Amino acid sequence: MKWTKDRVSEADIDAFLGVIKELDQRSRNLLALMLFAVRRRDPKLSEALDELHKASPTGQGPVDKPVDGIDGSLLRRLNRICPDDECVWWERALTYAETEGDAHLYQGLVALVERRVAS
Image 1: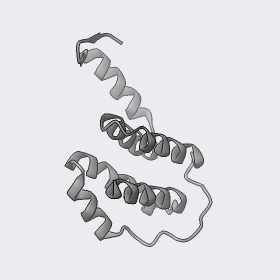
Image 2 (image 1 turned 90 degrees about the vertical axis):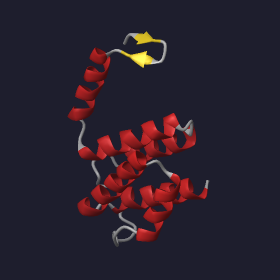
Image 3 (image 1 turned 120 degrees about the vertical axis):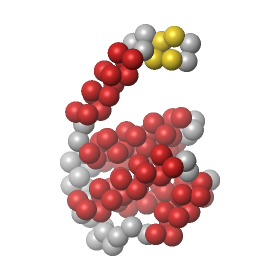
Image 4 (image 1 turned 30 degrees about the vertical axis):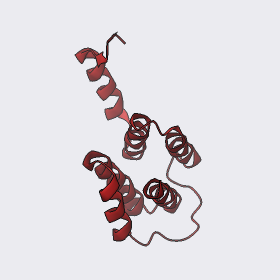
């Protein structure tokens, strides 16, 4: 990868996007959220997202309780503090977990959103 000051070459960006396109939707959502955490210099959130990804790589984690649906008030609070592009990825990740019935991922994401809005 060729870095020039604060820029990455177009070829490097294309290569990176090619790798991302190969990921499944679950991994893509979590990777995007990790990148936002890194950009904000929040390594704890990035590490928590990574642990969440490792905990149920196939989406078949332990189901403590059923997925009830996305909490609108939580998303509104998130929208007040996050940039729009980051909110889109949180919503995508939550919607994916909900539609796939992955309660482990959903509950983990909700806990991280609650942590994010509390900070």
